[in-house]
Image (tube, rainbow over all chains, first blue to last red; front, side, top):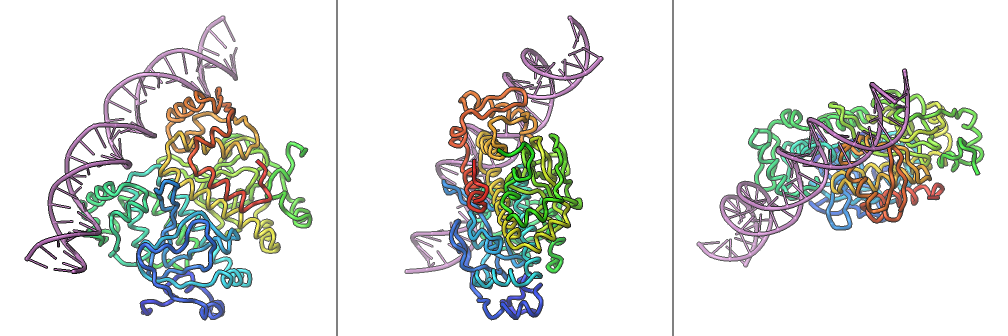
Length: 239
Length: 239
DNA sequence: CGCACTATGAGCGCTAGCGTACAGAACTTT
DNA sequence: AAAGTTCTGTACGCTAGCGCTCATAGTGCG
């Protein structure tokens, strides 16, 4: 059993060879990620990349009028800050902590260097980025075609997978912000799911009771994304 | 003035150094891309990558029930087949010709090799991929929050930019499929735009009359995406 | 214990876009 | 010229989700 806050809880870090890991591990720094904390602000310079361990971070776009929508979610399977090794340096999305926990961060320069020096790391990060690409594409599709009910199922499953726990600490208000819908809409949809015995929730604490039921009720988007993550990053498949 | 069908009409190819270009140009093969042609089918093996010159290709996800939604659009600023150098080999999106024209294709193996060998090419393609990432993210946001009117404006502008021509050959039916909406909805929205004097259309031929007007009527999504493309790929800025 | 705050529930009118059906107009083929 | 096909316009009832408002029930704190 790993300690509560171990870098290797992050699957990308865990997938590194002993050599690679030895090289960067001295520079890894543990940071607590409180709920709502903004890890990265749209368009800003990226100083560090973050490897979540037991936290979840949402990438969202915030519109001029303040409304927002999540475009992807990152947990211990991934990394925040792909723009660094992709060469763009910045990106137009905010990164917000959606489920409190921890992450390890690494100075951007070090990651860039490692990316150049190690083909294996490069391949790993690029495959992760492709998975992220798929997640974003599927979010677009889901936003277009699927009902709030279905989207909520997808979202709960994505969160559950990334925490490896059936208990999620998040209010309906927060979920509404992520999905870019009304809070009341989430209340209603969540009510139906509870009615159906798939989840149980109470004041900011959601428990997934029937995971298979959620999958059945979700749209295909969840499965498509999960399949791509599993295919592209076999080293992380566990849930 | 470039000849009608010159590889250098593709901005990525044009951005290569003389050396790099000399190395791959013997393997470039011109292919005509008729309207509706499926360049790549979801999940299939990728034999070639395609560099559009005077055509536009849509990446779309096709759902189990047959409904579809575009997740990104690629023209002469880009390349079809990022999954090859990203390491995933396949992706869950179909690539369909949305505006007829031509592209140059290159055997996948050759591109992979070139990607490994040339840092400059690598950086170029990764920056392009990041721009694509932004486009997908913004599509997700747009699908969530913006009206069909606004989305149509965005879409017309994206197409116009990629053709460098005010005349687009596409039916409302086609546009509806891309946007993932009803054909009647497009008829109505396009009617309003024509009413307002921004476009003129007639049986599959749309003319952008007032480009600035379209931008003003579009949501911020168009501008966000355009700004990122211009920033990440300065060598392509022309429109 | 009482008070303030936070999370959830519920109601109501409104609108965008859907599904469907049909009609006319323009272009193509014979 | 006639017939068929493709594209566009119009209409109508329907539903999901919005914006808003207010009520209730837990929770934490002085």
